Length: 421
Ligand code: UDP
Picture 1 (tube, rainbow, N blue to C red):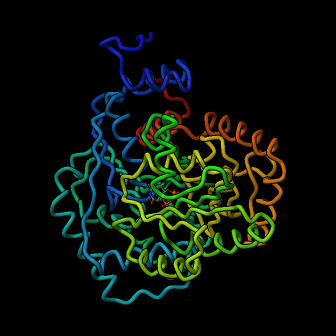
Picture 2 (cartoon, rainbow, N blue to C red):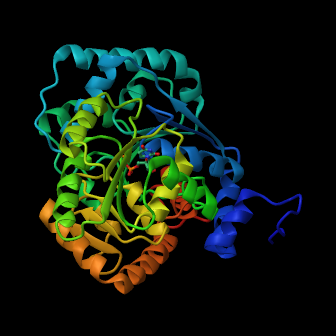
């Protein structure tokens, strides 16, 4: 049953039905019915900035609308805690980082303090989903837990630095399940492992259609020339996103296509202490080139990012490691070919010759950019395919469905068949 636009009973689920189809939404309602009232708590370490916050901001309200009693808690911490967790991030993505003892103590103490504040909510929840390593120790600190606990890893942990992984693993052993974005990331853990790829919300300010005038005003605001080619990368200023490599690729393109401009749009997430230093490296590399626009945006600049993704001719995500890369999904949804790093979740999204090209080096990226700029009809066809690829695979309702089926899995794990409804 669907409500008509403007009718009083219209819900956001009806809006999603227009994008993904009625049957997808009906299936969600059916799956959610037996889970009505289930107390679900998601925990991460920042409400703003980065992909996890972006996902939870949309996933939790949709779970609520489906009748689950879902909430989102954010752990708080100081400088040493975030220094430590950033080092975890770097180590899990493969860097040999030795983390001093005092930072590990700050990590554990911060989790103890947060457990004091959150213990009642967490112990009473039916399902707790802990996102990434920052809040991982909370489980050991909630000894009277009654629900199932899931560790949801968003990081590219294909080849973690073993010393740090072994330390963190101690906190993960008692979880009832773990969830990764790619099969490649699965780790030897004693609990069942599930695969769930992230998603974007097509109705959010980040991804909705925008009025032409708003897009033009963003160009005026940042002095972007609409008559010229625009390359774009949107990312936190993080070395794994390789912003310096993007500038190098742009320079190689510019030798042949002088009218090209580059926008590097980013901000700093509140749980990322290295952003400032990387931003400095990027500014040095840009060397006051008037055609390189480095935009430091506030964390809620969703419409601005949306507009930039719409005016770009080609979007880059030249990451060296990438858990998934929501920025890739966002660009594909806007019909843009993406030149992405040949790594992690980008491999799921950027399909060579179909939705874009994967590149390992600035030279490789530049070559692919030049190829596409010479073939506007191929760019257009890739854009069309990219949008449909996202519609099929990477929109929020699919991720919500997988979270619902995960919950069935948690409560009926050893059964061959589960009767729904
Ligand atoms: N983002 C943003 N402002 C910025 C940089 C990034 O809103 O200045 C958003 C971006 O649009 C995407 C998310 O943050 O939705 C980044 O997610 P992704 O998976 O690409 O990378 P992560 O930051 O989680 O490593």
